[in-house]
Image 1: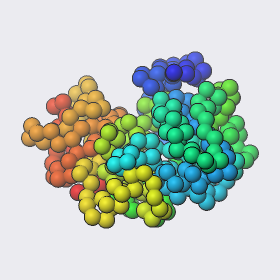
Image 2 (image 1 turned 90 degrees about the vertical axis):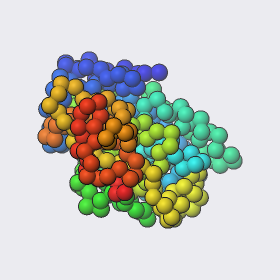
Image 3 (image 1 turned 30 degrees about the vertical axis):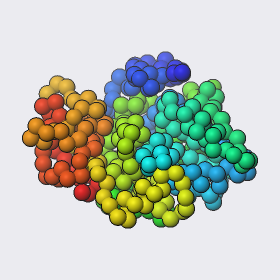
Image 4 (image 1 turned 120 degrees about the vertical axis):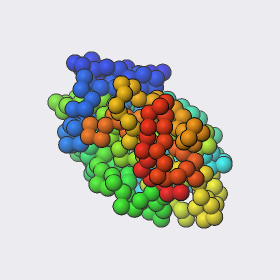
Length: 340
């Protein structure tokens, strides 16, 4: 069920589509909205994201045992990013997780919360945990703020601070350690849905087009965009923030360890500058070709306020790093993210 945000009533609001139909794609000027976010002034309506809570004394130990990151000793209000993998190690969910001392708050991609809750319920066994999908009661706002949440922050009940692109814990980088997005500040503030308008206050709003453009420019992967049914975390440089390499068993760990220790991921994430001389850009999912042969596909496409048309894509590992690729007759110059 898509919940229509009251912020769609703001002047200039244009609704998104698909799972993002309940929030604004933009408010009339996507480029200005990007600048506002870059300057730390704007706020993004992310109330289409699903919110899940886990309560009970065993909650952190339980989540630690099933997901990729070390969350067992998480201090109150500290944030973590952790992945849920399939038995074969393919990425299924990206958990934006913060614990307030009694409740673990998790936000996930729009429309995926019910599936996550169903899986968690099956894994409860005899542990003292309770899981709930609370999207109808709580909403999410995106803010260009880098601090951890603390009691007394206005309007919210908790906030997840995005660690990207820092290396978190015992992990590894498959992209550059000196990452171009170093210093990026972003968090997701969880607020009672009835307080959504008040939480925004007088701050200028930016739409999803603006936040997505900045995400693509930061090479930040997203479930459902940079992932498909066979994506492993190494391909998109997700170990750096979301995977602890020596924390013990979890579903899919064998693939994480095997590829890290013995192999190389079959595909690699690349950042692309697209030729913007035409009026249209290729769509997300469009094929990427080299000399007429498909070598990958676009995962995210955006227009950046400084860099122009940009994209993220997954390509075959052995695709030459200096090759100029093409998608729907639009040329695409690569920047290596995950080295071959």
